[in-house]
Image (cartoon, rainbow, N blue to C red):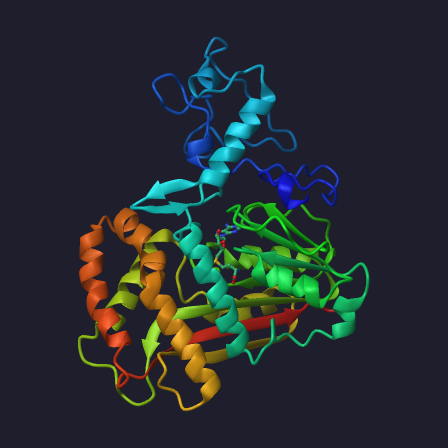
Length: 389
Ligand SMILES: C[S@@+](CC[C@H](N)C(=O)[O-])C[C@H]1O[C@@H](n2cnc3c(N)ncnc32)[C@H](O)[C@@H]1O
């Protein structure tokens, strides 16, 4: 669907027969409520399915609202007879997101995602894109996909958690005959995009609404805390790739390492990483997940699986000019709000801490990041595989 028509999960053109693509996993904020603001009790066993997530496939009975007079939609400012105002209210909620500690977060999606979606975050994502391209020697991906495969008309690329869509748009420019679809829970993509690039709002942890064997390339970068169930996501990618199609996942594991023992004892940077790992574990999205991708891809049936681990330096200490620039970009990114983007929501909402406490931990970490005598790096995993021909 064109971006200007973006709305939650309404990709129907390529949907499998019977799959509407209209997923029900909107956030609490978009759910109809009763007069006293409690969730509507539909009589569904709350331990197995929430009121909002009632099954509607196969033989499942669709249960009715238990109070026909309940005017809960009107309570929420929705006119029950006015579908378009109901829809536009939900759309505006998705676009607006939710405010937490001065940052804006996506309101759509099965789980709450830890990172913001405001302007500051979008600038950060675009900076990250340049940093990763440089880290990968000016490549958008490293999977050995023959160029011809993506140059053919009818080829399709899916970018999971596309963010600002910058990777998807660069790929659309590079491969004008391919169709590039970027999908995200947050409506943070621009309106003016290459004609072969489209964006959709959807949760990649839900069932994908595409035909099997539909894509030539499924790509996902920087999806830390975005995905809980990687084996399922990888299996879905396998199903929806054409034979001979490729998957590539890439992410940093944010634990500080050094090759020359320059990390000080009681390092604030190491401590900040430990806290971030704790947050992610509690969210059910462990940060070391990339270490398991290769095995999970093989289990799903992928061949030619490779897990390449790049050293991503922090600061301008490396000898190589390219890596010095990468390190400088990483340093700027973290000092100019990266720490807070990664950790603020989790620290306050998952660990129950106060923003001021987080700033105390981060103050020491930030001081270390500026010290040219401390030579840290993190690991950036790029893992790819091919669906057999
Ligand atoms: C750190 S950004 C990375 C953006 C992009 N992949 C890049 O590398 O430039 C992660 C993105 O994943 C999105 N996201 C998080 N959970 C998601 C989910 N379950 N389904 C779809 N997108 C999700 C976020 O909204 C955010 O835009």
